[in-house]
Image 1 (cartoon, rainbow, N blue to C red):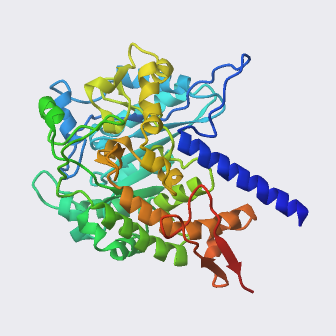
Image 2 (tube, rainbow, N blue to C red):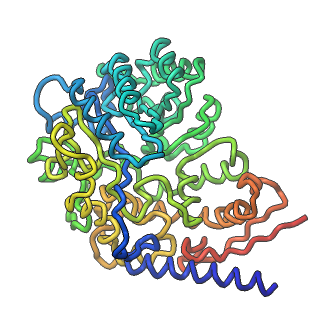
Image 3 (cartoon, rainbow, N blue to C red):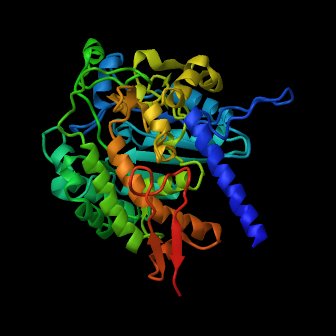
Length: 470
């Protein structure tokens, strides 16, 4: 009993230290360097845009299609020269002994054709230098056919498929160039992927068309044979002055801590409370029936944060700036959501990738996510669950008027407080060497304990009570 008491006391002290670090704007991972420390290369994961923003669809909510206005006129296809430099320098920038992850996105990256990716793999093999590499491609799926899927299956590529839900939900905003829905084409692509046993997951954008029907959307994915899904809330503002000056139709991403006086949302943006309820409804179904058999990445990331582990996604980490993009012409930008002139870091043909990532400009960009976190967030009982989420969405004000509150704050707080008691049980199961899916067994009872906000559990305290019947 004495040993158990000491262990629990140590855990409590660690939780208190994390809470203190969060409130003070530091993280437990931050330590003072010593004189003998050698600087490690910055670990980062780059996303390539080989076709720029070009796409065969015209989804209403796409934030990247309009970036064409910021690029030089003409063909936006990545040249072999840029491709070779990118692959060579990217592999060289990654740590020895690790896996180099290549991510291809757009626009619609399949538009550039299969020969481009065959050449990319040729370069990867040439410059691997003993390192392993993987490839992931995010696609709308409408151009996938037998030849494509033969290539993807043989190379063990991971495919991210953009699919929002049932036909009427998906076709509300995901239209082609003729203004017609793209659902049927996406489903044809999905069937080809399954037939060739290509590993895939689904990226589902959440809009007002889906928030009113959470379980219908969820059941659709399960019935379609999907095993992994990520729900991405659509949050876009109508153009501000900065956007108009750049010739854009959507507001530019805010700088961390920037005060936005007027907020005008697009009609396809989710309402924060509706998004929170959407997650809660799906979570309740998932935690009762599907843990371990159906992966909802939003829940996986939240559980990781609850357990004090890296969430695995930049928006729910204390800092960002480790997910740059490279455009078709070799230009490198701080982030997919900040592809604007002021966030350009350099060009892969003339500059070193590691030096770009270590530049004061990029370091300031990444650190600002934590540094500009409002006091309201630092005092929030579930603050360490989201870390203020993506800076792009921090255009609201806190109740006391401080700038920098995330638009989705209320929805996230609703979800995290709702899910925390269940996460507590799952964390205990994992720590005991048992699968988290054991939570679905009827003998495990979750007893919520009220947080300072009135429900749920503070993510930095986790003092829930668990009763295990026999």
